[in-house]
Length: 373
Image 1 (cartoon, rainbow, N blue to C red):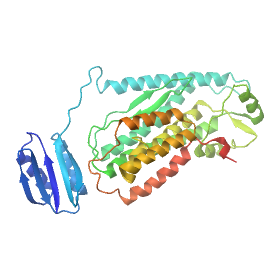
Image 2: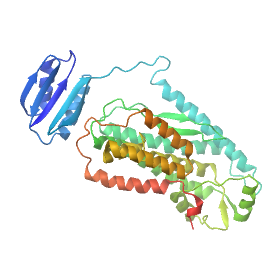
Image 3: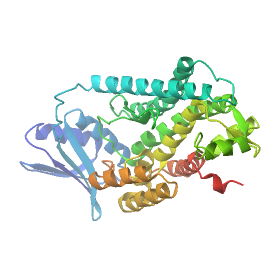
Image 4: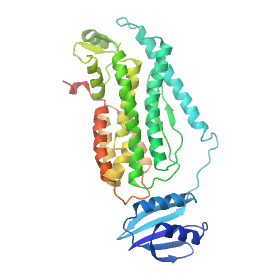
């Protein structure tokens, strides 16, 4: 026998709660008090019923979670916590302003990179700086935008309300023009399947665009003799950037992966490189990154914490110290993503998909040149 345990304040009425529960569960017994209501049911297949119950209660400003106590399962329902009102910017204007700032930073970065390459003595000019900067912005923001669109599509599919994407502007020229983007959920993530679907949809969608961009970038990126490139690097004119396996494959399509030549990374190629880097970071099984959400629903709370520490070690080995420190600080200050139903297991098909996610993370990882033959 299972126990459905309901807590509420004054509204909605006890009669309403009783009616909603009995519409979804075969209630065999109930205990009604002034503060809480307990509904007993014997249904073994409660996963989808809980989803429907949660969505209906949410429309009435009620929050419920599925918990297990011994052999009994409980649904705990409470009033939704009040959201703090923004005092300085509306929810609609904040993402717009951040997006405009990100576009500006990306255009500045693309213009500068193109202008610098055009002054390079050993290659032909790659194009008008403003025109290339626009294409660069389309490429980079296209990767990030489609990534977030993947999250939005999956959320809408599961009837989860979200905010518009928040693009994070970066530091052009001396750094990177954007630090990615994120969305916030305005609804409740009901179970592990839904949390996994929303998390995995973004990186896969963005990766498709990144592969298209990297092929075009590999085709348009100029090359110079490897000996000349080595001399230039000694003079600090150039600096090497770790490539991933997908970029290696794209360069091989155009015979630009030989030892006798060195590729000069064009702005479009750099957009692909940055897109792969952001995808790789998102796929790490750490904290509340996309990969962290996936590992949380597969590994559970305890092992997810260990996976976060393991991810930090990987970042340190790849020399991304700042990102490792950033994740460490945030993971110590905020909780992991916990679905309302943290009892029902993840479906088998999604576990198989996660194996593919691990493969994609390896393919997108910026690997040191020393490991390649």
